[in-house]
Length: 269
Image (cartoon, rainbow, N blue to C red; front, side, top):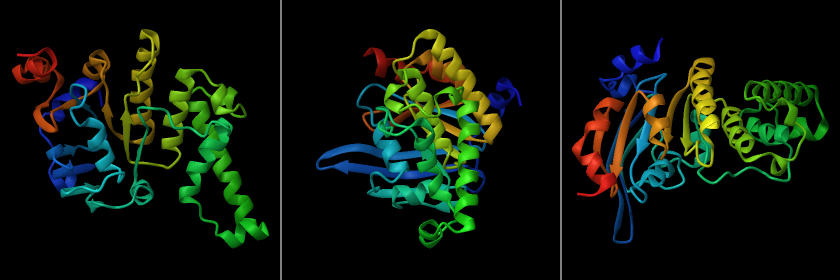
């Protein structure tokens, strides 16, 4: 499907039963601060959507609620129809949703390959006994994980870094490695928190192409937080805008660019 066709189809949000990710009425307060209020979202399978807003709008809090870092005070979160509201992060990841972080969180003393293999263990079939006794299932499982991780590194142009410590990688490669690690958990929904942060214009173009390629290759639904409006408007098929923890607009990029509330939120009254 072309990007133009996908944008046309995504103008109507999917019903809850058909959505890859459906969020309704989610709220979170910290003391007297209402960080997120009545947050709602419905992502059609296979779409790339954006979550934007000024600094402090509540975007990262929303991501933390979706991925179990915070437990919602109210509301419901469904992943492919399954209620995941309030589950712990590892259970949400196992259910099929993975994320990256605004501040890169790699295991810096481990190689790029080992960073990915750790993520793969979420879906391992072997037991602790298999590992301790080095039973055949352990060896087969380890080889399968290694092969899968090497394919991911190759797909993200990192195969030459497989045995390098992640701390030694240039910034842009660390960003790609973190995306690869999220993909190693075999998600259906991928959340990207400011993936273009710190990148130069050429790297941002490559990032857009990579995300579109990953969507096709892994049949992913993608939700991203991003401050670079060029990346958002050229990549996302639908955008949700937050300000002071509340949704002020949602729709395709062309509508968001013209929305008076969005312009005021970014530029002032």
